[in-house]
Length: 375
Image (tube, rainbow, N blue to C red; front, side, top):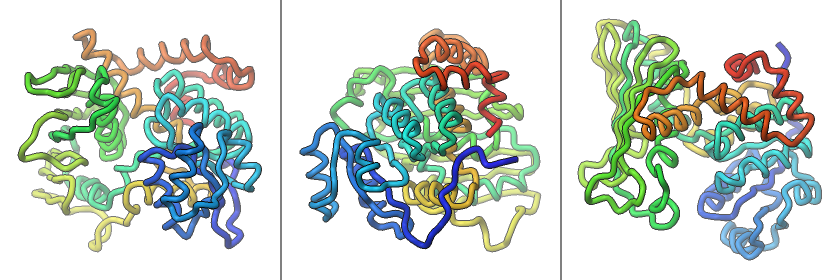
């Protein structure tokens, strides 16, 4: 099968990139880009030019080119790729602009604000022939890879559970969100469960709630049970307002199979109790890199070699679909079938699409599931 996106052969020089978004996460990405020998920071894009200047100065590059237009600045500075670190509401327009300009994109999670917009971006990536990869940064964790390797000795895995209990006082928009835990955090654990199981969601039943002491306006606690495509169950329980004995930001995990159990506290080496023998090298799992540095490395490797990165847009949409399905289940008090959500999102995407070329690609898909698993 041919590579579904254009590659950029390695000429021995770093890949020139522009970073779009100069907020807190944007600055974290700027530091990561500056520290990487694989890429060269060519410019910063932000609607607030003062914020872009301040971010450039903080990165030690006060003379770095800045601008308000992604495609325009990339063209001016000769950038070959875009890193989109804008707020979720801007993911769709910024990524669409970059792809249409022939620029591959590495974007922060979520893929977009909605599954509808995510489907549009998947079709836009197909139309442009460019790579759009979503940085699900918590996949890039050596201990997570090791937990997956160890779980191969458990026989048939039937249950994966994640407990997430933290008490961050963010202030700002998160405190006012309707679904702060599910929308802003749980997507990480949902995506990690897909990685551990090599499976996608079939259905979910979810309940949200807000403890009496919560400082969030919306529900800061949730429990969800997902049926996955292999028949496994993924159980998530979490709270963003639970001080004391807090879990890792990665959550605390249990993987249960017929031959035993793997435990991972989210921060340290996973442990196993099993009657089977773990597969793979005795030296353990390969090192995928750490968080956003790992996703940046994966992105560049994909562009250089044509390999499929973990966050390729078509595959990543299913993680956002888990979030939307969980929110819908909590809102209606019913079990939600993910295929029904995907088909409804697909119909809405066709009605909402304004780009004729993207619309043609969307209409050519035989089914949503088939399209999302094809590239």
